[in-house]
Image: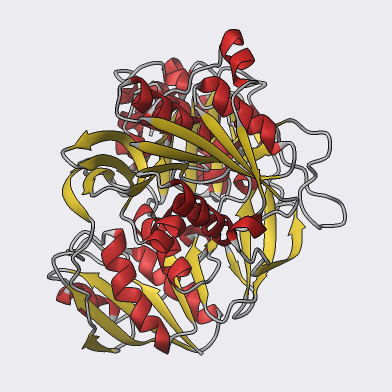
Length: 308
Length: 249
């Protein structure tokens, strides 16, 4: 039994999601290798080699892999699968993009966003926005799995695996990278933050979102948002927490002016402590909150920020 | 160009899923069903492309039970030209769906297939990219905007860090994200007109696809319940609870 884990990185930093995916892979049993696919990513491979429990790291580099585009990732991973029984990747947008291509090429049904590993072929995954949990057993000869990383602890950094180079198929490919506009922020990353402060429709405008951000900065927290706030244009799409946005599970999640639609709850209800501030005492968010404050957010949030 | 839009009939997004007591799945008896919300966005995109003269013909396809025809009619009422209904009472996995869609693409020859990025029932998020792989086509997933760019397409994608733009050749597969557009409501005259639009009846066997499931569902359970906590009276009380009781700040 051998499992290949695909690393989450941006060519400059290896992300924690990789360590969490390694934890899920180790739970399946057998040897765990990590593939770092990128460009100028030798440093990433060296970091991955330190992850506890990793047997070896494969480094595939090419121009086409620099942005981990779908066709290039498929072409790099599929030939490697001759030597593996399973491939696991974090369920971030990078990997959600190409993993189904890998699965279809291998004629395998993908098992998406698993939150539990029962055995080498049996997994638990949320369906219906997390309103039900399905335990599924794969009958395919190889498993293609994406991992909801918030459900797994991060493997440590005490290992010393070897790094080998792997082939990166050269293409040509039919899609190419043009550009990206990444939200620049000095705040912690939403999915990795210990504290997340999120605003919803109740915040009312993009300008008003500043009070959410001020509170977040006071707490050293990441800023999130409900779909309603993103759709209304208060904040960019990458702030969205929920079924179709990001799943977060911080130590503390503060939901401000968020009613608590099931789609939003799906993305944050695994947080350790949930605080809700909302003026509507009937808001469903209070049903999942450990601490609820029924108050006008425009009064309560500045007061909270000043008192911390 | 000809545009194909696959759609799925799912539990309405406002209805909370209830797990069956025998743990065999989610109870879908006598509950409101609708078109998957992402698929409505796909339909809207195709109709707008037709209105702009980019799309020459639009086809909506649904693979599902007899009632999936209502979902196809919804697409027709929004402005799609014609429908294909692949009838099956099985709950097909994305891999089988992608294989049937490949058969339809081979028969119809569209240059663009627009799908929702995920169905909100099983949340696999796999069909679009699987179809692209089976066809050997490029893809632009999680689309925030789509525009014609020379002989290809420019797709702005919603990614974890922000937005990423890719250029794809045609034919291509695009999957839609929430901010691509706001789907229209079908007008009454258009709903009446849709009743006359043609729907081809097909079966999975017409495309020679083995639809046997690869995943065995062992059980479906309620998620661990989260108990509501306490309502605090003031900001001071909230801070003291977070410091002393929860120890998180």
